[in-house]
Length: 115
Image (tube, rainbow, N blue to C red; front, side):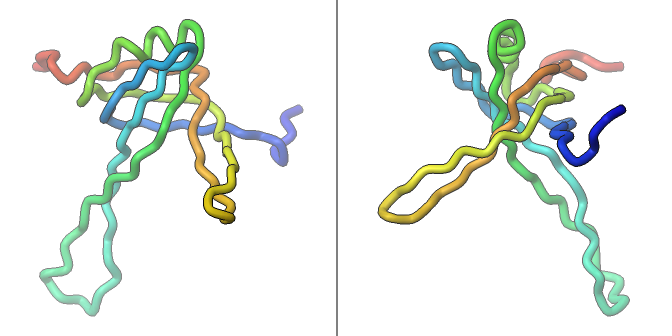
């Protein structure tokens, strides 16, 4: 039986922004897009606003090698786990988050022709 209190699963679909290959890990930034609908006063000019959220991904081994082939603008589906890192800078605690990727699939290459 699955213990929901300890489950750490992230699923994202987004566009590749940049790829950085380090010694043992490939880092990729992807953007997910969503639409924000403002709760206004009924004004007809109240149009949805598009919002981009950037997520840092880290891939190791075979996943990292595959991630290294990705190009800016590729649409990907990602599964992994959320990881936080803490450090101190100028006496203040800092924290950042990234996703350790366990599975990644290219949905569409930027330069591919779709009909």
